[in-house]
Image (cartoon, rainbow, N blue to C red; front, side, top):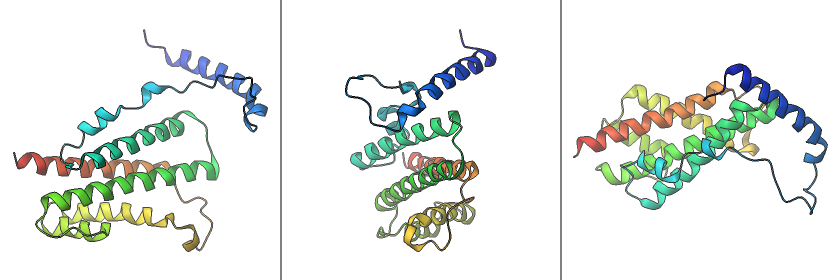
Length: 197
């Protein structure tokens, strides 16, 4: 039987007390005579096979598997963001990393899609491949604008190019936006792929 909200809250508060007691130990290496660790809730991570099934249009099996592995990392990020009271720049940098990962996946599946389904040479640049999707009417101008906005968010990964500190820049809205972008792109490619059957 599922726990009630009150029961969940009570258990979290109990865990928080234990974590607070252990907090002085967390900054150091685990002593050699301790052979256990805090259990991660593995059930929140989708399996590789589950994720691979989301992308039948990807013809490169290695890419499909690597996309699945990378999405497993986003499951971990999502869990940390949702259940931990992480704050400040540390939370923002976790969100930024999630945005980068989501956009890298978009870039990879776009490359594969253009390579396999578009009657024009694939390009190494993500923006150029988005241009091809628009040119061949696989995506609309509005969809292009959304995907390109996500691409521009990802382009801020180069720390040596930033002209100001990255504080107050990334929010959950950005993370959810990038996650929605990959889902929308997957659905567009899936619809096109199924139309070929």
